[in-house]
Length: 431
Image (tube, rainbow, N blue to C red; front, side):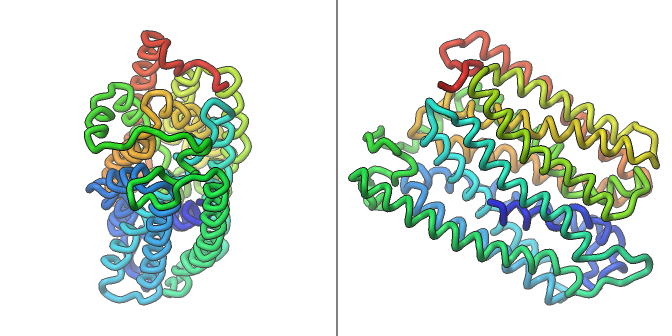
């Protein structure tokens, strides 16, 4: 997941390269880059995530996860080849590559979350998810800090294909290491499954692999009709809406952070990279700590509300704070970093409380599907807005602020449901 997060965010702090097609031999403009960024979510939206979640529940993590981890690496390789080739079809090829990469990454992440949720249910689940999230977001921090050094900002310079592709080449190296580590995980997990005398052939309809049943107990068989029960669950939709609104305001922002922060606060690209890196670096520290807080204290729905409010304050500062004063950019990143730690720490451990174990993978995938519907739209829209003139950064931040307002309202509704239905134990500590 470290490699996945790095590759996804490798252009975030140097997105200014695509403001003008004459800046690079690659020839992409802001709208083209926005199209490329939105490609991550295409296959996810059009059924891929749902199919992947079903496969996780039917076949288990080892088999399904390996298929999609391979897809993630293959898509990243296609993107890297497109950047290096610089052909007239480079944007099209990269778009196809990022579609494959996006679906593979999302299902790989779902497999990881599903495994943690099942292994740590009734225990320190939020803390375990926080640790995993911290490691993954270190990949984002690495990308934000490293990319401006791999592609040095130079006035009047036309960046060659090899210069533009440097972040992707590094990303492929990380991806190869990630594949090796995944192979180690599969081998260890298979060994653990055998030691518990579990069935290891999920393709024949037997018990899924050990990552899905750590205690070795049999579980109800997944049925396709279970999807309808998930879709009819009000709390599923509230979590899905909170996810899409909140994550769109953060992830779509990160994709264009350089193009927003540099003109708003009159800073060089490397400074912008450090400023944006405060987001993932803060989650490395605070995601596990907030996970412990959710495990020990509970009150998860209140932490979701607090995180959404902090994100709203951050985007309001980015939109309306005085321009040319970097202090406001740093302050906004502090608020956004806290929000980016609080909401996931409470949101993802809530999912196993609203659905049965047998549909856990499908439910996580469906929530990610709803999320990717928003990411597909708002990444593309952000590129269009930023390409329309000098006021683009302010206008796109107003859009992100509106998303946060809606996220706060949805979090309030979810909190009200938690109060009305105490049997779900949504605000109870994880014992």
